[in-house]
Amino acid sequence: MKKSKRDIGLEILDGIREVRSFKVGEIDLSTYNFTRSSFLASEDPIRQETGKRMITMDRSAKIESYGNAHDYLLTAIEKFPREMWQYRPAADEWTIHEIIVHITDSEVNSYVRCRRFLAEPGQPLMVYDEMGWARALDYHSQSTDDALALFKWLRKMSYDLIKGIEDESVWSKECFHPESGLMTMDAWLDTYERHVREHVAQMEGVYERYVAENAGKLMV
Ligand code: NI
Image (tube, rainbow, N blue to C red; front, top):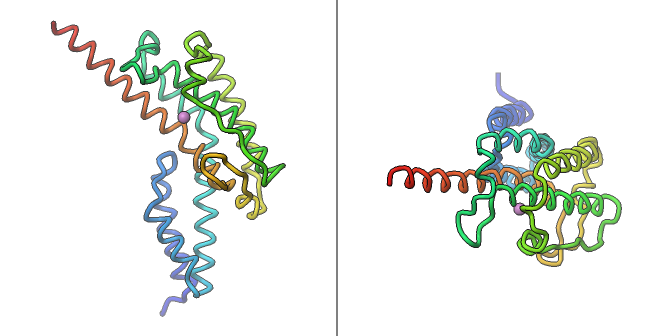
């Protein structure tokens, strides 16, 4: 029996769903985004419909990954012994302790930005100098336990707020970012979904340097 266009569209979606299931928490959507935009640009209504459903699926995977960040972070930092959390690999690089406090300070900003998009679209977002904050606010004197607890609740409140959004147009709401220009709510989600994962990768790099340095000392 000849397949209808709709059947073909659904098969493509199933294929993508399968690929996506391996990607949650490690999202690399470059090929996928390309397919999605070519579907959206198509004049064929079924391909367009498929493209729209792909956006929704892509976004719900990101929202889940976004909501899972605190657990992800706690699991990740278990690998790093506390005694090396203030180890600085180079003068201009952050320690694991500083990265943890930064994640929370960034989340405070993200928390406000999210609400700005939802309640006051069109308004400017506040930018801040993250290196300046780490220096001026003496991150090593701040509690990482408190920072992690605060991050948990900030992230949960925003996750609870965005997971139920049904109106698709909300994700196109824009605010003005003084450094990057107009930013959409979708771009906000993309940025903060990646943020913790990127910093965990950075912490892994710091830990590797610590291990390498100490292995060298032991051998001398
Ligand atoms: Ni950051």
